[in-house]
Each structure stands twice: as C-alpha cells, then as structure tokens.
Length: 200
Image (cartoon, rainbow, N blue to C red; front, top):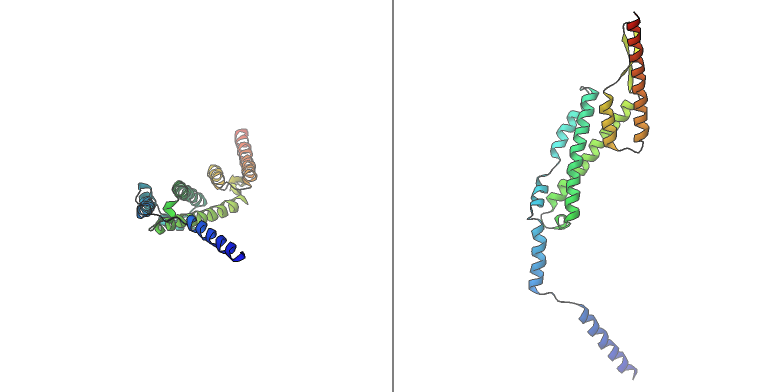
C-alpha cells in the first residue's frame, strides 16, 4: 500500500513539474530576439555610439596647464565639467528608458563610451574642486599701489561663484559665504582708496 502511494505521489509531482516548463515556439523566440536586436538599430543607439568623451582628455590637459592664469584654467574646467556632465546624463537617460541598449550584442561600444564619460566627469570634477579649494584658501591677495598695500581679488569672483555652483559641494554655502566676505574686504578697500583720492 505504501509503495502505491509513493508511486502515485511521484507521478503527480512529475506531472506538475512538466506542466510548469513551457516550451516556447520558434515564432516566440524569433519575436524576442527581434525585439532585442531592434534596440541597437534605433536612432538613440546611433547617437549614443557617437557620443564619446575622448575629446575631453585633450582639453583637460590644457586646463591643467599651470602656465595659464587661474581664471583661464577655472573657466576651462567649468566648461569641460558642464559638457561632460551633460553627455553622461544623456547616456543615463537613454539607458534608463531603454535598458536593452546596455545588454544587447554590440552594446559594448555604448557602455564603453558611457564609462569613459563617467571617468572623464570624475577627473574633471576632481581637478576643478582641487583648484577651487586652493583658491578659496586665499581668495584675495595683497598688492602694492602708490606705496600702500591693498587687498585685491585673486581672480574674478563671479567665475569662482559659478565653479562652486556647478560642483554642488556639501560645503557650498560655507564657500559662498567666505567668497562674499572676501568680496566685501576688497570693496571696502576700494571705497576707502576712492575716499582718500577725493580728499587729496
């Protein structure tokens, strides 16, 4: 009796397992493959394949050139950072809307280009933040004018403000406050100089 129950249960189990496995037809398989491969034929895939960040590296070398003025370097870094960030966002948006673009045959070019942009963005950001923090240690400098030492801006404060805004640092507000205080220092000195000139 026990043997018959075991055999019956085994048969039921085998039937239920075989019922769970669904054989897909050739048409279904073809439809799946076609849907997958079509992702790589879209205009988005074509655009992403051309959207690389290789050109950033050449310009990054120019921005790193310490023979250029800090203002010119800072402007170059900000421009580069904005451009590379926009490209990375385009990749992320496209891959979010169509994940097949990252997992299909031939998608290595797209994922490789995206990875290159992510790395370029990190490189530019690191350099830009380093320069911003270095300048913020001493945003004003002493200059001798007519035998008197006066405080002057190390560089254009508006460019510094733009760089700080673009970086979106955790201590952004503290940096902007420090910059505003430095600007007041320079303005106070300028106003005092003008008064002294007028008194003469």
